[in-house]
Figure 1 (cartoon, rainbow, N blue to C red):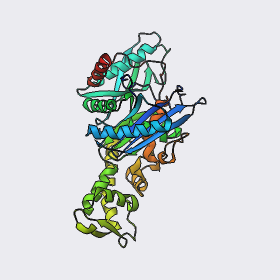
Figure 2: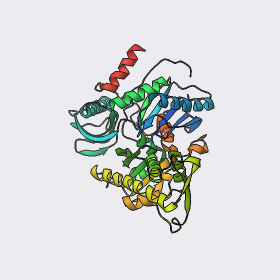
Figure 3: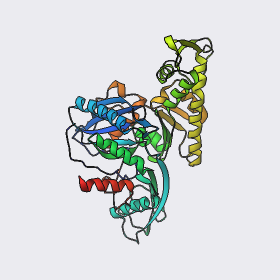
Figure 4: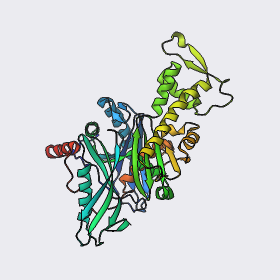
Length: 433
């Protein structure tokens, strides 16, 4: 990649999500990077004159150097990211200077805060909105964690509630409910270092389930209430949407790779063969013929490629408990967050691990909701390979980078935020590069 001046932009603060808001046209190519435990994907896109998105370049590599969303081997992760970005750049015939990246590292958490901001009878201005966001970030500051998103969910001007944009309204007190998503600062610094080693800057960090919902939920689901469950290789993340807002997010350190490891351990075979068995014969529901169908399984350490014969029912009985555990944890997270009612009666599954046969039916039974599989909305130029649930996050990142999913774009909501560890690192680099 060509040398370029190092310039790191801090994560963007956003207003209440308005998925129908027109995007700010970006005529120049821009790139996004979906960094996962088992795969890394890069998309390069451009906004056309009619406002639609066109994909110019696509790259895909097997994930390396990550575990449950966190970077554990800097060199391996760098090589995979470089190869992935290089593929997309060659296809698009352009070179990226910065990318929008999904947030899965640092154990992201979701918290709600209420902020009362004195107005004193005058009209509310953009400075007041900035002040509310800055106050929320200050209250949310926790040692070793950094706020990534500060999302106003609801404004109230005195006794008038459900105000979408309070600017210009007169009141005594502006009340705001803020949704803050933060992550461990040291994990963010590691991510930043890895991206910089690839000669790239981070333009924006965005919650993975937020953008997965952006690419797969229809407007009625975002309005009436729905839960997006993004089942990746190393993590499973969820987000609750209602009233065209993202109300809650959570992340579990379990995904499709854990199912593969369960199979490898239970059948005494390699991870490669366990993944193959899962892909070709995996299911979460036992059928009458499963006991009679025998599958060849290469045994670890055996000479002469010795094979064992195991019934397909054994494979199913190893897979099912891990998926049941996953949905049990999801239900518990929704209940503990008080989001069971806000989540409505709709669940959308996305991510590569949701494609296992029977997962949709299991989710419907365990969560007690209607469940469908979610594929990313069609993007012009998107390869067929990247049109499935496994690439919902990448497609959503591209839409986000183009300006979808946020309002208050005419206000700089950065304000004067508290200087946390990650912010101090950003400022340090800015001053010396």
